[in-house]
Image (cartoon, rainbow, N blue to C red; front, side, top):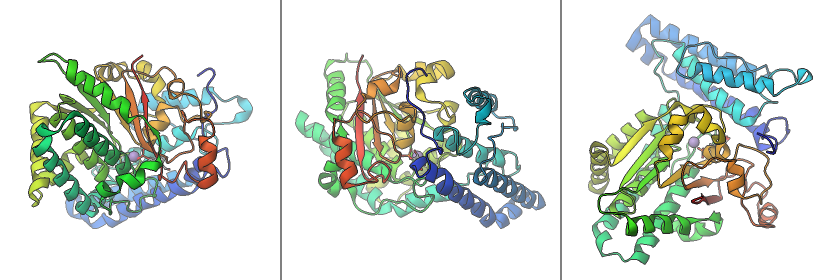
Length: 441
Ligand SMILES: O=P(O)(O)OC[C@H]1O[C@](O)(CO)[C@@H](O)[C@@H]1O
Ligand SMILES: [Mn+2]
């Protein structure tokens, strides 16, 4: 797009993009191969010889992918028929069209990081769907479930906190309600640290009780637009007609503990009447190791419902009812697992853009969503968030993200230099977070 800076890419040796492509992505591929190996006997029990053959085929396809990546081979088109195969191959041709003859072909350490990283996860999916009868296997399922089980203590504390809050909610005055809203927003923010692609698949479950550490974490919020979220929703609540709606859309990120923090926030939005309807968007295929698919979403609610802890189980029962009553709606759209920057959504996925336009507020969770909101480009730290969105604005929106990539906009002059001096890897450690709002036009 005209006037936008260059994309982050592996061309910049030593950059986080470069190190991700060189080190972290091969590590994630190796874990995926190991996971298939470890399920060999299960595949045999379930499918006999066909299962064993399928496991071998998937592993050879992933090993080939890893070799292509590690030797910087050209990016090759998808061959297996799937809902988005043509869109992906058109995008690959688009990337080719951006290069002149002496640039050569789109390839791992030359093309935009956003493109090659998304492509890698889509190639994992192709390897699996090319290997029936294990073509519905999620190579990341185990690690997402492990994150949930290892975070039990924090999840119980959070569900207990929510139930106490729901019981007392009608006696809270406006200021108390705002404080509770801000607490749960921050818990949802810090829940975003639990992402497995940053750790290369190493466990990243929530160990400490996050509720008691919000005050000490507050200085780590670099951009804090929570007040805008409160005034938008509180005004909706005060001015809306009896039967009218306030809809908040949440573009989800990681399953496990982070998903629990998002569902707790969504429950509070309904219980406080700050919203009357919540729409969730997950990923259609396994994505960036820990991202939420519809299977993860339903599995987690079932797990919470069947907990032997009464407040946790109460949450799960309520959440299941919200879905049955249509107060919570889950959307599956292929766009979220395409490589496109969000500024082209209205052209590439007009139906999705129109759906998002129905929201009063859209919350985008996580780092990858932030990279797509801002196009994963080398913006100056101080350019306004609205400018980096490059026309993407289906509704008032807010990014809730911990920093895990070398991109951040909307900072004050001198702010980036200050963090760089005290913490050289402030952009990628996941230690810092933002609430960055783009308000009503
Ligand atoms: O789950 P999140 O917050 O989107 O984080 C995913 C991020 O982790 C990384 O995979 C780290 O390499 C980034 O590429 C990506 O943006
Ligand atoms: Mn993620």
